[in-house]
Length: 317
Length: 252
Ligand SMILES: [Fe+2]
Ligand SMILES: [Fe+2]
Image 1: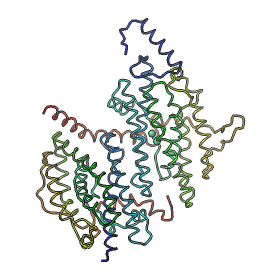
Image 2 (image 1 turned 180 degrees about the vertical axis):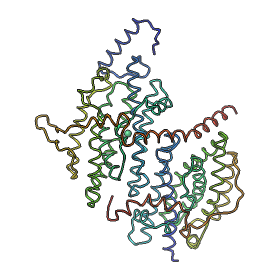
Image 3 (image 1 turned 30 degrees about the horizontal axis):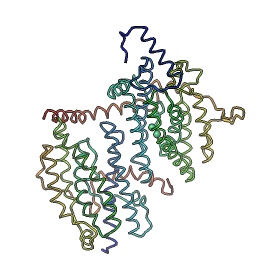
Image 4 (image 1 turned 30 degrees about the vertical axis):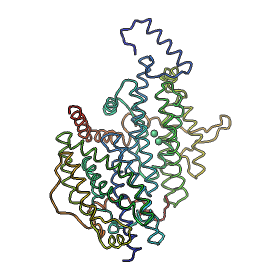
């Protein structure tokens, strides 16, 4: 890595080479030179991604002890375990950029680092476990499949591993919804209610409309991002609407209709006011999710300290 | 008591121990001191759900009343569970969970070593599979007890406290009743009395490595062989059984 003292022409040369490489679609490895802005962008994005995996364990963990069958409990626990594993790969991938997991956790606690806004919504009934797997993991996959070809190699490798598991989660979530839609009237009502509550926040997962997100030019030029928010959102809607119809769920959007010309669905207005409100801290669970993470982290401090103390004692013996 | 009744009860006991402890361990989900430990505890819970599934399914077959493993897991009332009381004890802090695991896994190591030789093919097969898992659970708990016991003053004190608190639940694991006696005669069950000194030696050795005192208190809680539990079980069941009880006609 170059330091600030390096002579300007050399820095310019390196930057030109970097731009050339990314433009040609070549991967960047941790040992390669990279501009500070690229490194910063990735640390922000990857740590946010890692935190999302970990915070996402909370709304699902909320139903672990109440899962309605042994098989359901097994599937849910294994899924949450996968998400924790995703958090771990992503923390290690981000660590290759010169930040530690501890620092990332501190940034999460201070509010400097974010996590996916979707987890600021509550999981109120068992059907929410279906809706989260199907819609939230479904939306995450669309985004992550696109990130498999992102320019930073450790991130791209993490995405390849993660995507395989995510598609399982999506199928299992859909299976919960499908089973409930074949069940009693109460189960169908529960499933539709979960659909109604999770649909719009899932669409918001892709971020603002392209016309309202002017700051992504670098991310595209450097091939961190390869598809726009609206492209990804459209892809998600097109595959999901058909799945909903197949099991008799209604998409809660009266403006939703097939557009023959664009070979995709037109959809209604997303409530960006709600999105901004929740992102800025006023969602149903923002406070709860973060204080839970902080509390658990603090309560575990004595265990981490003891492990460290033991390690030191062994070294000295 | 017929052999069939004894086998039903015995299998329920084995299944309930796995079921109830898995429920407790899964409460650690997104609550552990760091993610790696969150994943480890979830993993143990998954092993135990798997074990409970096989054993409760088998119990249903033995009983012959067409009860599935889920019906047995989720639709019995408090007095119909036969897990040892130690399995239902609340997680407490991390030290408490690890001590509980140490006490249970050490017992299970000896139990399933014996049950591998059971003349009941299902129990023998479950035992062989479980033994591999139990060795791992035990190694993990042991490792933590030694580290925490020798870590900081705080971690040492927490382990000692947990050992003192849970000690009175350890004796019940070795209790035998008519069920055991009948099945031991058939070569199906293990002689628990014979396992107790092995367990005591093992635990004393680990605790001394952890610089933790083994309690000398001989008072032991009892009751689970008759379906008598601590107050904690009812709350655990209300969580676990909620959906099955609220929507009895639903399939999930
Ligand atoms: Fe994930
Ligand atoms: Fe997932």
